[in-house]
Image (cartoon, rainbow over all chains, first blue to last red):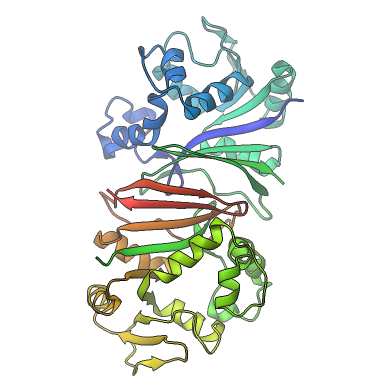
Length: 212
Length: 212
């Protein structure tokens, strides 16, 4: 049975991305120090062997339980949903072989033909809103799961819809002091979660919550 | 050597207290549902035997590692620092035997004589700012530690001063969707922490960070 899940990295003060991390400043990571901040947030994953292989970052890397978590999280994904801003940034940042290896549904008002990348990633541009994107993602995920990839706005939309069954957070001990928050605009009553599993890594704490 | 530490409960969306939890609405916990929210945040501690004994809440309670953590956190405290708003709320909510059993330095503009409670708690009212309160607290803590008790504003002041050596967070899987945030107004560069210890409880995740 396909599950809908979120799996993101979060700063200790609740931000998914630091202030200044926008397309406009993509080539100036020193702007508001966004590059160093984002690097500190993601340091834990760049050390994992499976992630390094996937992004062709070179040999080496850790092979412990955090690596296993990255692998199992990646392998369960049958389809992804993301916002247009995340796609626009990724279009510049991802390698030719975009690191999804599955269909990606991009929420956008822009009309565009599917964009097929080597390695099994195809981006589909959905103009009919988040419910429709979820239908399409579910249909193509087969027995695997649907990941709501981001950004924060898109995750908030799906949290408000009450469809997120599992929420994975890699909580990194960094303070951004500004940026794009994950948890806001969730309404009342908001989604209800309980703790499912905690994996204690040295550079991030991996928290998994499931819907109550 | 006396350490300065913070140990608080936090909602998953980063709030120490829900919206509506103010003196004005102290007797109407249904206002904005603040009572139920705060109860959900603190549920983990009301189940612990040591906490129940301390607050004379009756027998029973858990005696596992979370209980040990509550006990060791309490027993290490030689002096407390808190803000006036927290004191005002506590003055109404604490039992006659206020649950500190040590000196409490209250940051306030109000001039008031020390207030001695049965059981070893004395409240001292400090009019000369947070540095002076910390000096007094250190002097009276002896070999034990100084806890910055709250509220959020006061913790932020000490975080900005760079004196907080240890930050303990009981992260509860509840969303407040508003209220008093812990992490804001911390400036650039903010305080730097690394993960020290994680205790995985069923109703809260106990995160301990130490200053880098």
